[in-house]
Image (cartoon, rainbow, N blue to C red; front, side, top):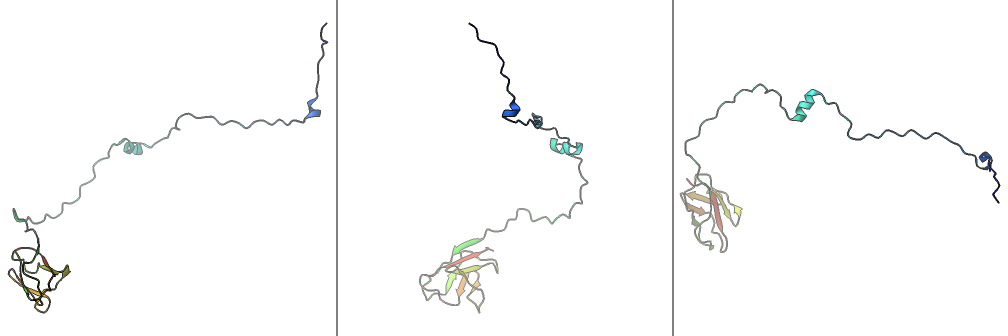
Length: 145
């Protein structure tokens, strides 16, 4: 026995209404970078080439030549010799300083030079206008003559 032949026909508009709309266009896919047009002047900069040399400026006025072989003496920073004991007012530097170059410090505080101030200097001798106390320390920074 054989199965009977038949065809099933279904009207889909009655079962499920379908709205068919066209799909949006797919943009083309680009592979690789987009070519960029570079002006020739800019291309020469990017490639590393250089342009022509500019016009040189005026030469400045030459300075005076210093004395041959001269180098200034190194500054000295030292503790003064002499006792800080509440009685002593006279202390000694190891070298004669250039006039006006001495920075004298008592316990790290700068002292003023001059007979009306904290100290005077004659040669290598420093005379304080008061006697530093026991435990005080005197240091000097100066340019030797």
